[in-house]
Length: 292
Image (cartoon, one colour):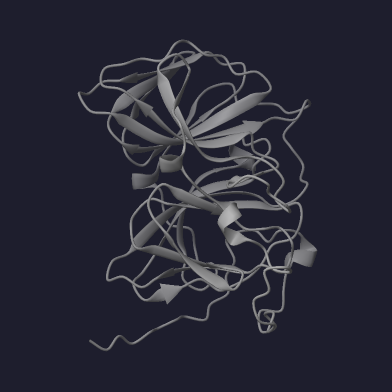
């Protein structure tokens, strides 16, 4: 069946550019043939929790690494590309299990619920957990999570360091993606995004966390990022593919990639399926002011 490909050339950037020098001339993508001696080894910038061993944290939480600490300009281990974020994991809490009370110090965490139901409590606040809920857990606040169902509670978890002079939130901040309004515009041509957290809402190192959807037979405007930017995309639904550098990869659910911050490796997500697809996104764009 013949598919007609429609792309709306709207450049309304809701995702902040990674520094002024980041803004490229989109008509001048590198025309040189792929050269493994010159171009990034893009498979080193991908990671999946399905390739990681489980470990316990918070007492009963089981974590599997997706991306870990490393050198984003020259990774020596697959998926070890994070310079600014401590870790990005897939986490699970078993049926009717609860975590131990935890108080973060020098770091804070964000969870995004994928499946299951439960609660999170911190200070005088308790919130329901279900798919589409995001929670920003600040440092210095004791908290616990509980799985209230006979199914596994699953989530993505980001752990970010906080600057020494940073003023964290005083309580849990909960965002329900299901009731959030769409961001205005279609960033990078076709992206439909919903905000979860940003620096104004209490992020310390990161600047933006959101989810992004885009329609069948569309793709993002290819562009690259420069040093100082840390931008990660992870698939929530199936049928995701992406361009990174001069190659294309399939991105199964639970698989993430970071864009090499070398200023010459473009990326673009694209949808060749018949369904809208969805990704989870977080980024640190540049050196920036933090809340004091």
